Amino acid sequence: MPWLQLRIDATEDNAQQLSDVMEEAGAISVTLEDAADQILIEPDAEALPLWSRTRVVGLFDAASDVEPVKARLRALLGRERLPGLQLKVIEDQDWGRAWMDRFEPICFQNDLWVCPSWRTPPDPNACNIYLDPGLAFGTGTHASTALCLEWLGEQGLTDKEIVDYGCGSGILAVAGLKRGARRAWGVDDDPRALAVSAGNAEKNEVSANYRPVPPESLPPGLQVDIVLANILLAPLIALAPRLTALVKPGGNLVLAGILKDQVSSLRPYYEGGFDLAVRTREEWAMLAGAKRAPCD
Image: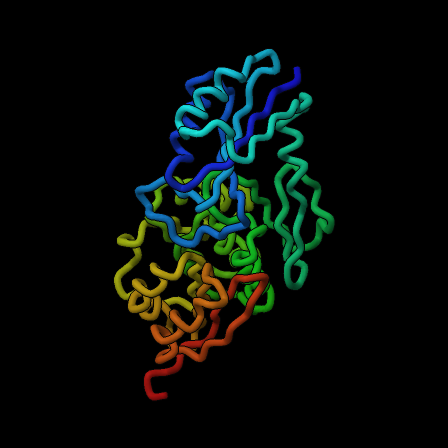
C-alpha cells in the first residue's frame, strides 16, 4: 500500500507543536530531521534535541485528505504558505528489510570488523564484532567511535584491563575483549545502556569477562591499563579527575566525542598527567596518550 508523505520546515521553537498537529490529524508516524546539516553537540538532557532548522515529516495513509492537516498547520504558524512544503507519494516496501540493508560490515585497523548480526562477515577469520543498531549509542558508523576502534586495533591488548566509560552499546569494551583483553568494565549511568552492552557482550561470547556497572559501582581505587571515554566535551571536563585516577601509570587514556575545534578546550584538563596526541576524522577529534609516572 502506498503512503503520503508531508514535509514542512520548522524552527527550534515550533517543531514539537507542528509534530503534535500531524499526530493529532492521524499521521501514522512523525519524524524530525535536520534541515541544515547542523551537528547537535550537547542538548539539554531534559529537552527534546532539536536543530535550529528542523524538518517535520508526517506519513499518512495514501487515501488521507491532507488539506485539513495543512490548514491546521497554517493556522498554527499564522501564515498562508507552509515553509518548505513537500507532498509526495511513497510506494510501499519492506521497511524492515530496507532498514537492515543500510548497515554493512565495517573494517577498522588490523582486521577488526563490526558486523550486523544478519550479515555474513567478509572474513570469518578476522576479529568480528557482532553489533546491531539499537537504543544505545555506538555501532562504529560514527567518526568518533571509528577513531576509538582504529586506535584499539593498533594496540597489543593481551591481558590488559579496560574501562569503557560512557559505554553505550559496549562496542569499545567488546572490541577490547575480542582482541585479547583480560577484563573490561562498561560504565554508564543509563540502565538501558548497561543492559544493551551486556547483551552485546553475550552475543560476542565475551560476557564472562565483561562487567557492566554504573559509575558509583566501580571498585574503589581501581586502576586499569586503558580507559576509553567516547562521550562529550562537558562530561569529559567534569570527569577529568576521575578518568585520570582510573589510569595506572604507563597506561593509556583515550578521549573522544569532541569536535576538532574543542581540542584546545579539553587538553588543559589532562595534559598535566598525559602525553596526548590528536587524531581527527571528518570534523571529530580524539586525544590519546600514556599516563606519566608520578616522578615525571
